[in-house]
Length: 466
Image (cartoon, rainbow, N blue to C red; front, side, top):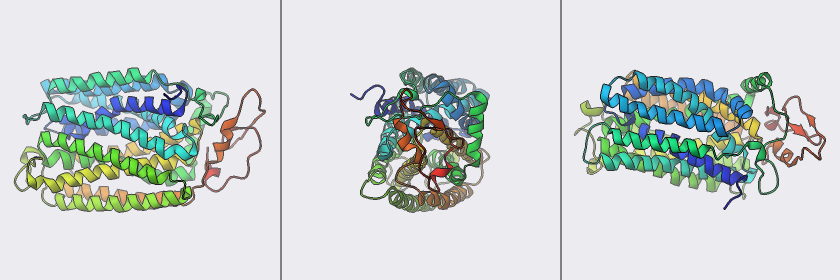
């Protein structure tokens, strides 16, 4: 059993929270229209969600640094339950206003929760365990999506309509349990790794104005700006994959079946990528370059497969013009489109894991990570908001696919450029062995870190750390 204040235990706790909160949300979204036959309300709600998510992700780093991870995460998890509960109201009224408003509230909570999550899985582990921690989190988190797909698949197996109230209620209860699990999180300042180093550099608590200043400095950090296209692309494809692809040409029960495959693919592929990114036989820069090449090639192959399927239809749902009508998993003609969706789960996992791993190479400090992750999630949410608006405004399906593929291609060169400048250890990794009672320290004006000795001259990449 891991120590309570160990990075592993805290990572398992936040994984449980995301399993029960965002994991259930992903399961609903993966059904296309959150289990509704008409996806318009869900698309509008998602656009509103990611708009507010973008704002509160960016300031989420400051909130987490000042308020800690426990209470903000618990409150944020309740916003997922609120959002899901509005679909019960929608089932009876078909009025989507409450769901859209709940999407705005969920954006606030989600922005803060995912910032806290990023702090834990990126800054808590030591340098040689980052990919392992990210992979473990991704496995546990996606088991939530996997089990969330089982519920509607089993309950609605013989039905073809929208999800029933009972299914939504199960999701609401699970998301409330997630809020309770979040109360088990420990403050970042108390986390000590197995080698004795701390998960955060010891320093005086910053005030509101100072924290706001440091958050704004991230927008001048050239490395984070270079990673902005990566962040923009990282959730962009969900709108197309979940609504235009899975939600358009498959029967409701097959959407649930596809979800099982999608999240299973994410789990398996995450483990495979971890084996590469934490392989000590190669320098970290080399590992990163190999991983970027694999992700790029796999992603282009999947979008090519999606294009082959997409050229067969231009309308979705009950009025689809797909040859032969909606696809069911018991039909042999569904095998190819289902396989494409499976591999969408693979590249989703690889891309998301790469994002966290690259950000984790920039710093080991929890406070700095909070600001970096907040920036990443903020830009990510802007991309997602744009993508869901493409869905909500009924942009032609082929055009949406082309935009998604283009966004991916544009994101990879700058990602590769940052990876090629990665060093084997972040500048601040060796600063984690401080003891505030025994070390005299000074504060670096540029970084805000406390250091017990003058650091060596940083390289090009780590010099940009805020």
